[in-house]
Length: 248
Image 1 (cartoon, one colour):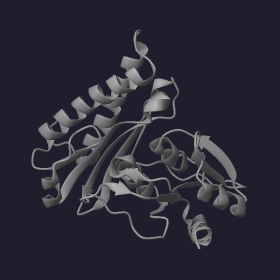
Image 2 (tube, helix red, strand yellow):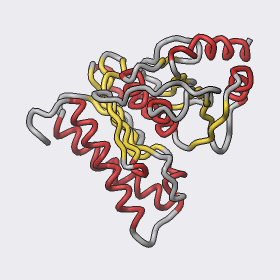
Image 3 (cartoon, helix red, strand yellow):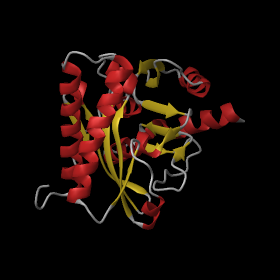
Image 4 (cartoon, helix red, strand yellow):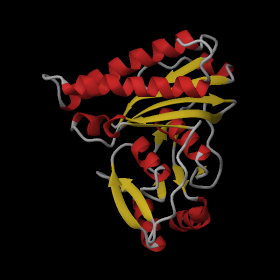
């Protein structure tokens, strides 16, 4: 715990520290694949939860790797953590995985840090990078293993180039970093999958919403979130229109 540390500084420091734990673990001999992913989840989660509880004892905590406490809903401030987003990519030795540390206040993704340890980068809502010029044609991110039919439909009609990538955090930060223009996900996620990425993306000036255009809300009784759109604001209306057309 660091005296006087802001929520943004805490989120960034812990996401970076969890990333270092994960890189160190992966560099050792003896673990790979699913076993490595399980060990990484466990070790990163233990540190994140311990440090958040020590630094912000009055706040609630929701982590993918901890049993949910329904009492968190009575707290306006809840830290939402994914200690290892992209377990498969991490276990395969790839770089497109992330660590998410977020703070939702009154249901809004207010503070976020997304570490991309394989790239040596941590992006935060306090200091997101300036947006690069949009791509021409635009680039649209899809799952490297199971691209959604809705995303493929939107990409085709948008004239977008498809970019396959791993974890949700890696995809969202690719839009923040200017490597892509649209991240549309309709396969279902949980609050820890996108709270930190949404906070960073919103702070960077990107459009963030559900696929029907409604706002994303956090600290819900049911932590499942069916869909997500993160994209450049100048593309948002057309992407939302195409998504409605696909459904309709």
